Length: 289
Image (tube, rainbow, N blue to C red; front, side):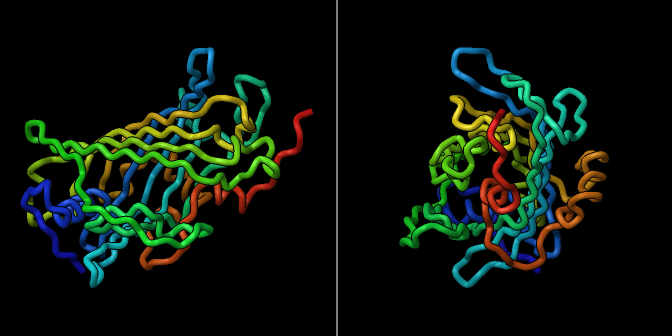
């Protein structure tokens, strides 16, 4: 089923913004799935010293858009993984040596199934799919992104800055937790073909771009409340084919996370964060001797 959409460029229309964002995120033909792939490096930032390259990462997302609801919203159904790698060879790692403590720790990869949200003509500032938060009336403002046209390319910057209670509270997760609150930012840059975005025949548009994330130390690094944080720096691309994922990454997923190689076909949940999955599936590390 194909969802109707606006294709004539109108940056000041929140319904056009909704439809353009949906076509970038997925495919408005619900029979199709979209694959997004990201790879890059994770950097360690500590006060008073040079930044360190800690490891690499490989990420892919499998996404499907559900038909438009009566209120015009579109459900984005999604699975996503992050596999950690040797930043030089690109090989997936299962152990990691902490460059500050020289402790060898076990790596915990990420497999979020699902991570869904609603695409609306309104920017909804109260999360809708995340448990454990007080219900409140959402604050709605028109969905208007900061688009720019440069030659035959449309550039979109999306930034998100969050500060929320840490799912890994330090009284229980002494070595994993950075503190009672988690401070996280994501900065994405999308480069889209102007011709594709204006094409009424294309229910999905491809992009190239960059993904950056500022986050507390990853819990499996066992840095506790040591001052500092991680920075993800990566390049991203979207396709309608799983073939954009490197062969050795697909093989690792097939052997260990086969269910993550296709997008959901129905809406289920709840959607929870990587830290919440960690709290569910892992146990606190013993004290450092």
